[in-house]
Image (cartoon, rainbow, N blue to C red):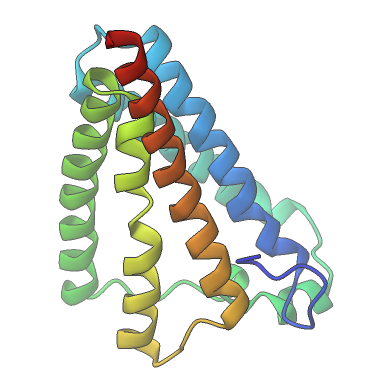
Length: 173
């Protein structure tokens, strides 16, 4: 619902965040199941090295492929030229990198030590913040279907957490 399939606003490229979410969920399962004893910062480092290699590969290979001009026109955010690297941009990149490392390490640690059903709903609050930031920066209000989608994602997380808490309580009793 958030990406609005079937509407005039839908573009196939919007499926990418859904695929990213599926990969993220798989990463959470792997982190919880197989990496509980690994240092969080080491997992963050491997995560970032993997994505750096992937990004360099994609950027290096892009000139080889001919991309349909229609696709380029529909997705200017993916295909525009590089912006000049100014001091302000460099500082923003550094600040973003530092905040990302802190947040990712904390998120990994949370999934290592707490139940996913407790951590995930807290993490889903980013959807609310994304809508607020979208409005604050670009004065774009989320559509009604986007709000419904956000509500369904956050609500389902809360519902699963409440169900798990009730199940644990019934096991104790």
